[in-house]
Image (cartoon, rainbow, N blue to C red; front, side):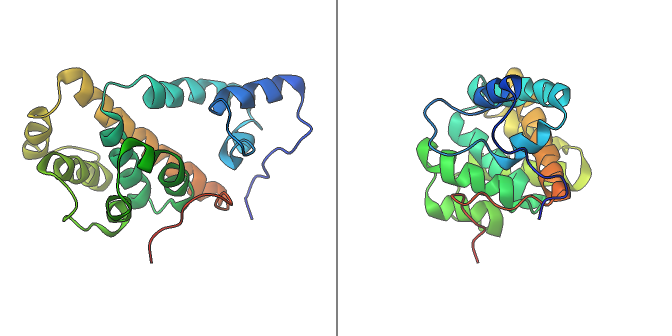
Length: 182
């Protein structure tokens, strides 16, 4: 049971409009619990939406790499909630296989290219130390430009924050979301 109960319909008109902006057009399910909890503080939610939406829809990293970073950051925080949302809605759409999606949790290195392994190792370093070694930085810099490197660090940190938030709120998994592999 969540520590802060998500808002439920009927929503005030301004909350309804704000929640609509958080969700992609044509989505068949209700706004995510996370979004409905955040709207208990609409000003905070609106500030968070700008960065979150920018990272998802306007980023410079390839979509597949973005989802690897998100999945691994969520897995490292133990956040099945956010990992499951992305695994169910984005991972396959950007070309990740089931084995790769599962490997973001299990740590299995076999389904990854050298570039993808470098991404995962860099997420792990950031998670463990809040820093990147010279080796990790240089490995990524061989694949990404400076703008993408900045985005990578922000993306990994953002989803660590989201993981901490969802875990601290004790959000139940969305009914349609994926669950961590056994």
